[in-house]
Length: 434
Ligand code: SDX
Image 1 (spheres, rainbow, N blue to C red):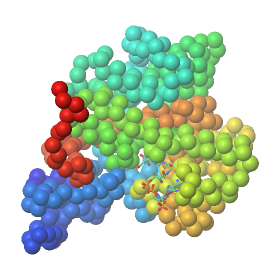
Image 2: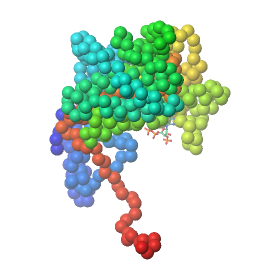
Image 3: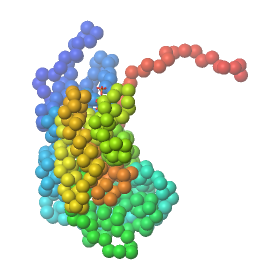
Image 4: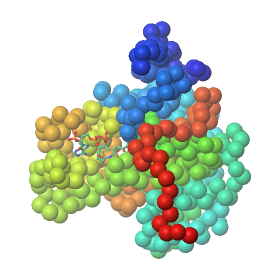
């Protein structure tokens, strides 16, 4: 068994007694004391496989990028608590941290920032790509298609040097593509990126600027956007990241892996939940504002209604990102000097749910999607672009996980087994004589 670099084999393994035989399976332990049974030799020695729908109990890899303790509501990127990064860091610094494992020096961050800034432009032919999209197209498939199409403008990212170049290009160009897609959808001219603006201000400029008047990104809004991107930057082996790894494991290109990750994120149970949360809050506001009535439906087994933005596969405590976003929500709304009916409804839903037996016994808490949409809405981002914003944030995490996979000597193409439950062997009888 090739030992993964980051895990230690615990002296006492586990014994599996099956069919009169005892098989010892190694127990591996990570740097935070998490333990797993290494079943790499299980089938060879017993003929058995494991079954775990949704991989609730199954680890796909060892990783040194992000640590989550769902019981305690802990999230750390490369060992740094999310709360400290949220308060003191910037999105590009966090992107460098995720990609390289250490915080950048001042010179490294300056060079990385310059490199990203210098790659925000898209090839002029690429601009026409968006012109052929329907104006009412959902921006997630447009974004996924654009990332795939981007690979046709550059040589295959099949060497370390070209992968690094592709990483910078994607971090630099995805905001431009997202803004171009939005401008196309509202029939406004595309705004070229500007090198004199920081990452988040540049995105706000490309989204909401227009050639007819000067545009100055509100620094509070730009900081709120940078914080949203930081909070979404990585989250260990979630659905979309596992998709990036699965596609990358076949040695498909980086662009193909990221494009697949974007599509996986689109699902309403995953990144698409932030759009569903706003639609849910608007529906409650439209109908009768009754949070109690809505929650009764969310608890009803015969009703498919769910409290979107609540619950999580790993967090069985408050998602630390949601706690930060709740505060940011209030700051941004205070900034515009207004109030927000949707925020009031969201806070009421949270207040009732956190003391309701149904949610308490299932350990359902607000997750990252519960408050993020309210902030995006205040920034002026259209609801159907909320998951694109999630993708912009998650991009460095996907890229870091792809790199880790690519460098992992234990990596093999992902190919799960199955338990077959279909028809047993039977003779073919043609429907009619030929
Ligand atoms: C993200 O994995 C990640 O890290 C993802 C993410 C990231 O950063 O990448 O954190 C981002 O995807 C956050 C999650 C966004 N999705 C939503 O907010 C959609 C609403 N949440 C649920 O659909 C659900 O909680 C999931 C999908 C998030 C988790 O699903 P699980 O772990 O498979 O749990 P489950 O569906 O089996 O639910 C367990 C029980 C069930 O009830 P019982 O069958 O036990 O009676 O809890 C209930 C569920 O019905 N339940 C909910 C609920 N979430 C779970 N009931 C009402 N409202 C909800 N939101």
